Length: 399
Image (cartoon, rainbow, N blue to C red):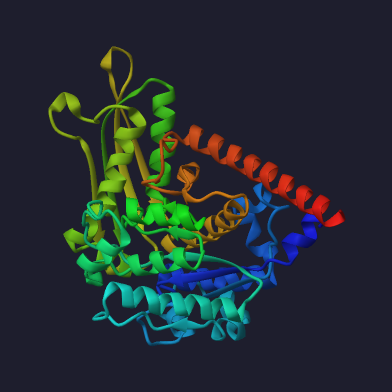
């Protein structure tokens, strides 16, 4: 079979948990635009060239779940991320996006998994030829240690799902054979889940999408390290006024994200920033500031040392659009998941560290240079593996 024809017969279906949030609703517009005018979206995707001959640019479909009972269009208007002229031509497509109500909060974990699995199978029946990917965009949840559970039966019997609203989605997706993008800071890639994902042949990518400030932190920290300049301190402040910012005012919910944002610097540099003071001098603050809405702002003060220990500093001010930065990355990751599953990968994919604050898997690359290099190598590996499989299938069909 010709590779191009094979790709064109496989649409992409995004199953989005948190479909009506700021990122989810922005993603819905990106999906609609991708299907009608891919040239308006592809230039913003890192996979546009890297995976161009392995994936179709269209069609792309979206379904999902959300507790919000307003329509998707109403949510797009309310969030105000995109001006009306950017989405009004896609109103018909956006009105057709099927978004289900999540499982009842008082339903136990096995019951929630079963309900979500039925939803996933129903979505697949609507788009029977599509490659499905679960996208987790649910809010940050309180940090809990789930590593003590040795198998799924123990997890089912001892865990109440209230504090882990996204865990049932991940388990249901694995049982349905659907790859997973964990864009949230919630730790879902626990041993029990990873073991089952490998068993079912499901790749997982995560954790905590790296959209703006942390992306630039990785770039700058990697550059300073390459020049053997010592980072003496780094102060980061974020202000944002969307629902994510409001949610992160709960210290229990913010703990995971703050840890992901903080740990990344020490990991890159190979030492604890501020160790000469006896305390970390890497500080990260997040403040909910309603006037900013989705247009978050980030300030960084970077103190570093040169030869003779002479101090220098950098000031960085990012005025970004949270969901506009996030949505193309989600699309990229969904495309990677389809290709990786087709190439035979399962379990965590550390090579996708380029996209995440806290990449999961064995020894993910840390510096920006290494992350870019490993991502390119992953693309080449996927090409070689899939082209080899296609040739073997063609040879078998000709016999």
